[in-house]
Length: 113
Image (cartoon, rainbow, N blue to C red; front, side, top):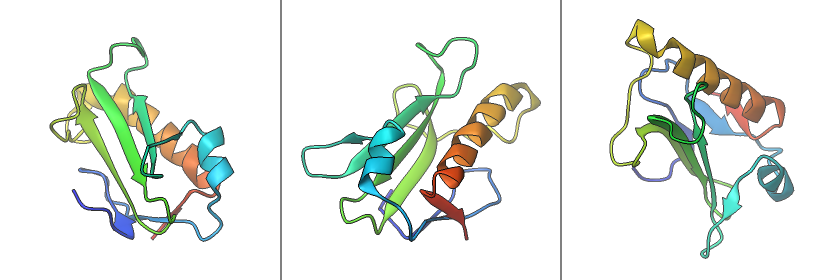
């Protein structure tokens, strides 16, 4: 998946963009880790019952110039994207996902396109 200015998560009807007010230190405060090439990555488990060995993770990458990004909900190994919105049994994952997205919007990292 290539970095883009607008991103969606499989199954979510909303589209997101990076906020014009995004700051590097805000990303670091939220738990993003800076990679060797300067990009920022966030990975959070979505399983509220077992946060250390989650079956589903939220991943987000922001380019070092803070202009492009990508995000996805993936399997634990990160190889496949997962649609957590189609099964009722995945409702706890959806709640955790909504909490993370809400936090990113509140901290002016994301805006709804």
